[in-house]
Amino acid sequence: MSDRLADHFPLFPLQLVVLPGELVPLHIFEERFKALVAECLAHDSEFGIVWMADDGLHDIGCACRIERILERFEDGRINLLARGTRPLRIIERQRDLAYPAGVVEFLTDDPPPAPRALIDGAHAVYAELVHKATDRTPSPEDLEGMDAYRMAATVDFGLEAKQGLLGLRTEGARLELVTRLFRAALTRLDFVDRAQARAKSNGKVRFG
Image (spheres, rainbow, N blue to C red):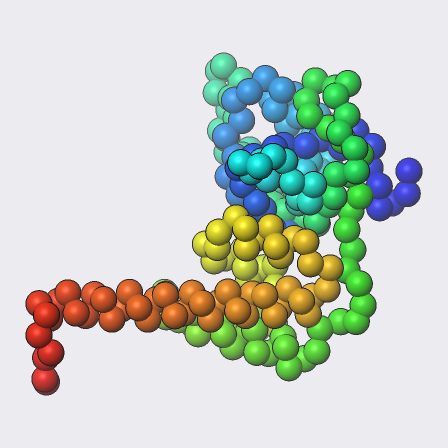
């Protein structure tokens, strides 16, 4: 197969969407997924996390690599950290292994690269959101190394929004989406602040 296709690629269907660069903790307890983890550790290979939604398994997911084992239990259960690496699409499910697997295509971006103004705009809104939520302001150096995936991985978006990001094949489109999501999150934070201020005032407007 080509570099963009992989056969018998291990798959982990979960009620979870992972983005490239995102670090996620996993608790492994089913025998089939213990076998999956053992295979990946033995060959230092990736596996795919794909969203098992209420309406079924999505075909686009994210390849992940085991970053480290946190804990092993006597009964074989494992706690680990995995990091998203690259988006993928399931071409065909395969059921002849001890764990779920399939033929997958690793997805690459289409040209052109994102305009500088779009990158800077997304970074500015993201920095505002981080400051509003945490009182910490990301440095210009931190921001420069963050693409749309890496910014979104640090914000608790819903699964639909994260799945939408995985489905976009240009960085420009992803930056436009995360900018809208960051602005919506800022609006929600402003609303919460105002609601808390009203609650503290006991329904009265305070002067000074």
